[in-house]
Length: 297
Image (cartoon, rainbow, N blue to C red; front, side, top):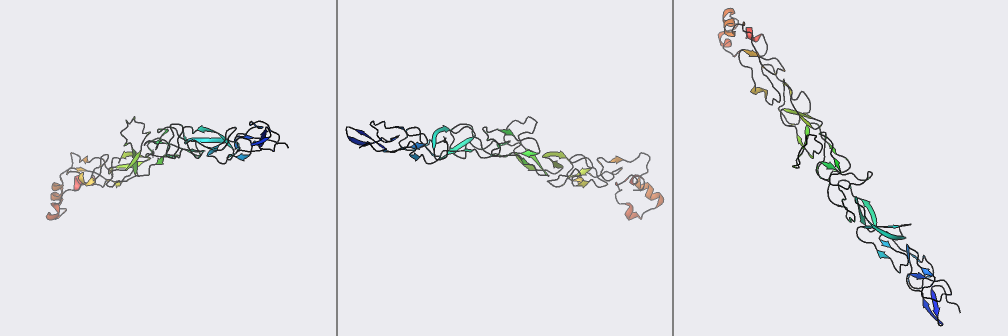
C-alpha cells in the first residue's frame, strides 16, 4: 500500500513527515516533499506547503517553520497578508513597533533611534521647536523644526504646528538657550505689561502721547490719549505722575509740556488788572491744558 500524504515509508513502516515539512503520497524520505512555504507553518504530518497560516502581525513563519515565532520587541513583520508574515525588521527612526505593527511616533514626540517599542518614542519635542507626525512624516530629532517667529510659540511637546500668540501677549524664550535675535525658538508667552501693547507676539512701547495703565493691551492707542495738562513720553503707565508745571501747558495727546511764550503776562497780573475773578478763585493754581492758559490762566 502506498504511503499517504503527510507521511513517508521506510522498510514497510510509516512515519509522519517532520514539522516544518509536508508530504504528498508515496514519500520514502524524512525530507518528504519539501519545506513549508514562508508565511505558513507545517506541524507534523502536513500535506501542503501552506498547511496553516502564520496567524498575525506579531508572528512570523520563515521557510520551513514548524510553528509560528513571536516577533522581537521593536520590530515589525513583513508578508503578503497580515496573517502570512515571514520576515521581521527593526522599526526605523521616527516609528515605534508593537505586536509586529509599525506606527509613526505621535505628534509632539520624536524617534531618534531604530527599534523603539512604545508611543513615548525617544521623548518629547524640545521647547521652542515642534515635531510633526501624521499626516506629515514623523520626526526624528528633538529639535525637528524651529518654532518660527515672534507670533508663535512652542512649549515642550508641541506637535504638528506651533501655537499662535494671542493679542495682548508676547512670546518669550525661557529655556536658557542663547537668543540669536531671530525669535525663532520662543517657547512661552507672557501678558503684555503696563506701558506696552502687544501684537503678533511682539511687545511694543505705548507711543508718545498715550498711556497704558493696564496689562494685556493690544491696540496702538494703549489705554488712550494723554489728557490735557499732562505729558506722556514713550511707555507711560500713569499719566498722573506727569503734570505740566505752571508756566507750561499740554493739550490732549502731548508727549511733552510746552513752555509759555516769554511775552505772556503772569496769570496773577492779568487777573489783578482785569479783575476777572473773585480773590478766592484767583488763588487757584493756573491751568495748564491749553496755550491760552499762559495768558488768562
